[in-house]
Amino acid sequence: MKHFTFKPNYELDIPSIYEEITLSRFLKYLKLNEETKIQFEFEKILLQCKVIEALCGYTEGYLDNMNFLDLSLIANHLTDVLSNIPDFGKDNHFIINNVLYGIKHFDEMTTGEMLSYYQLMETKDKFDSIPWILAIVCRPATEVIDKETGHKEYILEDFNTKNLEYRANLLADQSFAKLMSITNFFLSGKGGLEKILKDYSNQKEVQAHN
Image (cartoon, rainbow, N blue to C red; front, side, top):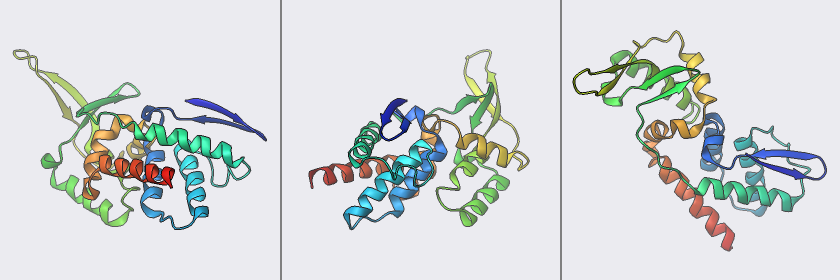
């Protein structure tokens, strides 16, 4: 995190890398970026405020008393951070609170998993549904190592909805970078997360030259 101190009484910790942004905050940012249409200068300023508040976890209106030049400094810092897109990777497991989680491949999903997936898609906003979808495909797992080849395999627990809400909230609070690859897959209907981020970077470059 990068610490900023501004008048009149702002003490701000702003992410400097993707690893410092949680999944829930990043999804709020993506939703803002997709839904906000900028036609006038005040809308651009308002979006800057909302993006900073979303990515840093501040309440709406928190930055209203900040000097505009200071606000622009933070917005430029975050633009640089978001422009440095890390490698998405292809991890099939991760650890949270000493619990090993495996990731289910979409083409291996069971009927029950697919039913839950489509119910979520029909009842929740695209971005709001992501932590819940991840809770379906990311589950506690056991590492199994083949004694002959040394090949590692991650056997997921059977799917049920018992801990779905708990796991969705848990994943929403994790570093977005940890879940970037699987999140990208479920946003691929819009061209993928990488396209969204590159479009945002290109848009900011255009605005900077206007």
